[in-house]
Length: 391
Ligand SMILES: *Cc1c(COP(=O)(O)O)cnc(C)c1O
Image 1 (cartoon, helix red, strand yellow):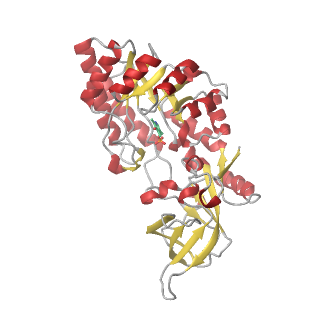
Image 2 (tube, protein in one colour):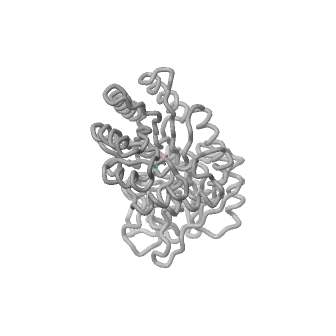
Image 3 (cartoon, helix red, strand yellow):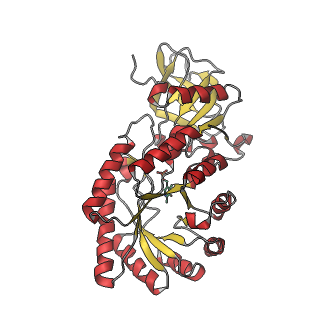
């Protein structure tokens, strides 16, 4: 028995998978099927573990209308990064009080647009941006994003580009008050698919330092901690379960803030949607580079440019399932386009059955987040990755 063989039960409840498969059998590849029942379950798990937290779904993870509607009905708020995302969410009758502008990189006219639509909660990590917020969204609540450690233990790090050092965060919060904004809190994102839970400990310690300093030196009482995303999905490299994350993070929070926690915001994306999706592709070609080669190349009708961009650097290792069985052999797995960057896995050799044939389907598990929203619209003429929603 190879340890590599992907089993359905390790990733899906068999009834859910049977329904996904039944639907998938009626469609032409490639596409993603999302089972909303799984998102609902993940949402309920998260709010069960963090009953005191407000959830702001990170829309970029999967902006499908059916998903936004489900989360709207579950009571979620929305972390929004652009005017386009804002229009999408507001069109579903979500009130602007349930939206935050969570991108630190924004045009001044876009801040005005958010303000005119009624959004009053903004992130910043720099003085020029903060000044634009003061001009275009006067009186709004602002929170400052911190730089965090932990990028080497996150499979898809979000550090460096976002956030500022603790000292600067303090200065910006003081400046926010001077500019007539409400210095509301501090945010961080420990990196997506963060496998080291202690990354939250270090970040919460920094937040505590900022809360105390502002209170003692400036009489400013911050009210909110936005702990971002980073909660795990199930890929090939396993993580602790969400309950373990929650227990440890709550411990860190109480350790620093005692019983009276400030308002806590979570911004899950990956952890809500990934495990609700299955990407179905078809094997286009199987070949060897020489007759004596010990591994095959398996080319599929989906690749880096049609939804699998998180395979860059082989960062995210999706479990790949096939109905074929029998002896396995190492493979390189690549996409269908005329770009040699369109190879998903080469260093990490996936094992697939020798019986695999051209025309067979491959099922990429845990592909409900960061796939369709990343798909190119016309590279080599291939259309964007389709998404169907059931449940
Ligand atoms: C992308 C993003 C998230 C979602 O992170 P996940 O790791 O997918 O949960 C949350 N907050 C912000 C600001 C983001 O940019």
